[in-house]
Image (cartoon, rainbow, N blue to C red; front, top):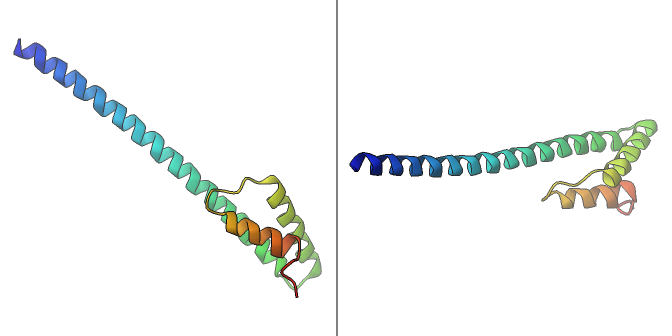
Length: 98
């Protein structure tokens, strides 16, 4: 009888650990994907800022074109909406110019 109870308890604990481990893996994976998306977004944004602030007119125009395409085509990662707003207002529309 004790052997059966021990086997049932062990099986139950094994299932609980498997479920908790599976949930943890999914949560960790989603967090890693979000971080990678955010990192790629900031890399692209940095390149656009570097081009827009260049002294050469041609590079600035390329930067503005990239900024517009980036703003229109890209999904902005959660929490990065202020950077997207700066991208739109200052760099694409030129509202920040004096």
